[in-house]
Length: 471
Image (cartoon, rainbow, N blue to C red; front, side, top):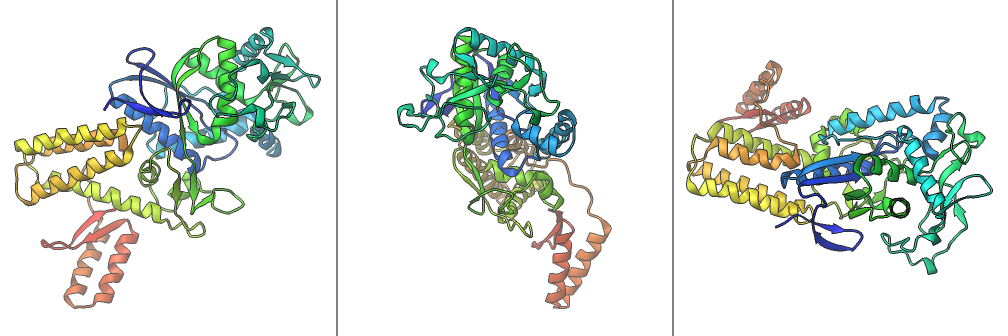
């Protein structure tokens, strides 16, 4: 199947047709660096990582921009509360963001523009809109976009403007869908901004949130590019305003394909600090979960389907992460078995299986990132190879491992290197457990097994005897 996406603009599945043959340009809305990103944020970033990898798996070259919003209402408010400069304050959360994406094996984008580095580009774009009569300076000295001057305003979110409650204008960066109003491009300076201000033709102030992405995407990707993504909550007003600004300023279509990721909920409820179900990557890893387990939870549900993350927010015991641990262990145990049991050559059936499994995997992912079909192809492959090994069929270690590595170019949760030697204390516990079982002291045997598990290992009983493996 050719690469196809559900385009939010048309609400239809469309075959992907790049602007420039094999060179794809993509923009994704990155973090607002006023706090640590939470697992809900990373649901979107993992979706974008999946999209990025699938594009590359199809043989395209990719230029990917993810912005860092380091000046907006929230960054200014919280830096003032912390009595820190804006740059020093946001630097903390920029570093934390990059640490987290490394933990989750998210590939780095080609560009990470920070808003404060592109103020002049924003001023230039606003000036074009003012000169065209699409933007105006109001009595509060801020510059606003006149949505009545852009005929197609609302085309992404499918807003019926005639039946919406409309105000005169909105200065805040974020607002409700009911407020279909002129929005701020440049905010005039106020005392609450402290020392956060830049000079402009309209007086000192700072940019509005929406113009930031229009200017940074133009600077790094050009006036017209292939794909723009974000969480579903970004569709309105943020992406709608981006379209209005960019198309009115640049005089051409802004983006060909819009893709939006559904929300993540925690135990069926919206994540919020007030509910005590607000979880960061660092919090989960400190509790003992690994990045691959968190990645699996976030990647294994289709991006347009709401994801329910199950966790006891008081103890951080998580059904979702335990299921991820089990799935990844199954995959890595299979890889170990292939390394131990497979030979140097495959039968024709196994060679054909390797190729057809890759084809099925890619076919699923090319259907709007259908991860369920892709995972089904992989687990079907694992079952078939395991049966071949059970039957002592000819199975090539290299061929099977190469197929698993193909799957892992997308999943990035597998371990292919031999694991470290088991520590002596774990081996001693395993021997003690063997003796307890011989003595029919089942209670003590279970206690030892639990102790081994708590130290990050697992004992598997097999016909050849107990085997200890790292979890």
